[in-house]
Image (tube, rainbow, N blue to C red; front, side, top):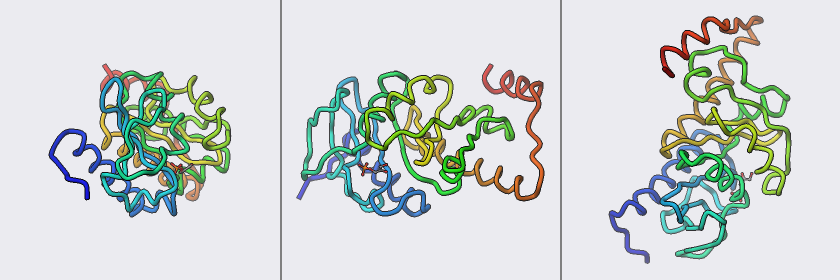
Length: 217
Ligand code: 13P
């Protein structure tokens, strides 16, 4: 039995479990899908274990690794996510980022399967919140190429669509990364609805500039 305490690390471990449960309850993941990490400090990252249901984790199951991916602590065993390198490359190239969430939200992932990004401005949220959500070409999940394929696209946007795979979202705080992922899924549902209704009115360049001026200064 692991004794819980109220330290920051244990708060984060509990938050990771809460986000995992929310992803599972939202049906953004099934089975053992998805992974979540939080950068605790310069030298320590907490990450979900591979091959477990992320909706049913306990705080002690979360693993601690270094920024190079070496295992620091596994309180009750387990191995870090097979997608660890994807998380690490985001932290390496975006020093401002402290949390990464990867899942397979069905409508956004449907766009990623159909070969469509969500990168044209059709809602203010697309402009001011996540940035345009590009579709990054397919690479094998957990393989060497996937993390590298993200690098050119990480700056200036806080979520990416992964072709034939899912969504990865990131932010300064875990719940903000989760919110970015949810925004991408909601955007996908809205765009799909507009397509079904037979028309999409994209925001003009002028409207985009006005939004950027107002919300991004
Ligand atoms: P892990 O359980 O290894 O994190 O993998 C889940 C997943 O979604 C792979 O794309």
